[in-house]
Length: 216
Picture 1 (cartoon, rainbow, N blue to C red):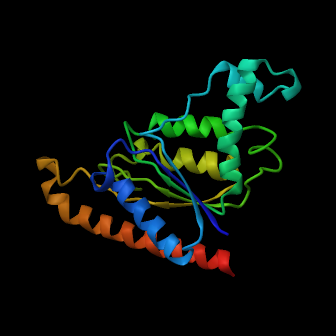
Picture 2 (picture 1 turned 90 degrees about the vertical axis):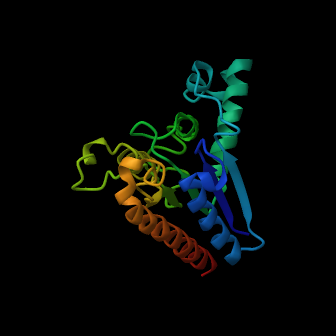
């Protein structure tokens, strides 16, 4: 039975969030191909995971037999998140851009699942797992645009997820999402609408491709 790990991190609910709208389109298309599949869902805005503290950090470098009670509890919480990643056949992450980078709740999840000697190192435990990241943003940070130097979402996530954890990463980028709300961006609304429609279509196509690959 195929397993999808679906993570949202947008503060906005439902259709008010561009990243959530696209991850929902992906999930719906994936479930259409895997109606009996398992979805592990984490809404990091509604139910954030703990930020990495000293006990959780030091426990990752110590023999479990030597863990203090505080370390044991903190490490067990990390292991639950790591196991969800390891058992997933496909991972879907909603990563809106906040202040040029990812939400702190998503960073907290990443800090928990990065464990040297297990998920990161010579033989990463989830190596090769396909990950689709929906990297929405209010403006445009595409190559050649004035704000290209401020793109710290795709660059960071590709470095950590692909280079660090060995995952197979693909991005869907809905951009100019602030155009309908910002009068100064009114002339960009058609570009926003085209980007939104393309992202929704790409999500459905990508989900089906991954589902077909799993079924093969």
